[in-house]
Image 1 (spheres, rainbow, N blue to C red):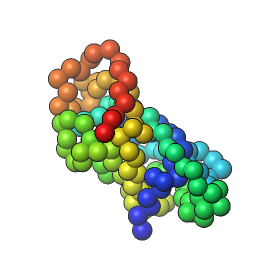
Image 2 (cartoon, helix red, strand yellow):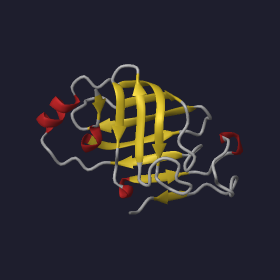
Image 3 (cartoon, rainbow, N blue to C red):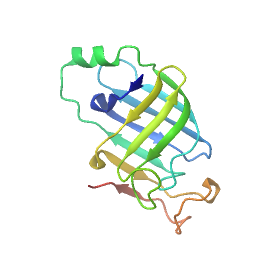
Image 4 (cartoon, one colour):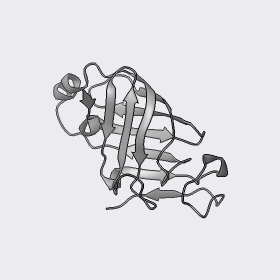
Length: 146
């Protein structure tokens, strides 16, 4: 089963500043605890080596969210699938797309709107090929717009 909890996302941050590792935290409506993320792999090349800040906008009923999120593990370990902001160079999708294979919950996919995603930081040289010719510049923060 594929989990698609985008609707219930409240906020979070994912960090790929350490090559081969994605860590972070996500908060979802319907869950009492913040979800810890600890994945093997890297973001796609448009944002590899950076951080993503996510903002959600759930306005539904708490019982609906609790039912929908029941069984979603509060510690997500596994392997990165595709995590992209949809920026150039586009390698997978022309829009934000966050996917991993969870050891507890199988496949998880988040598809936030562009205005819900902020890319933070620069790509360190150790992150490998990124298509970003400006590695090493001062840290930046860039909100994605549609």
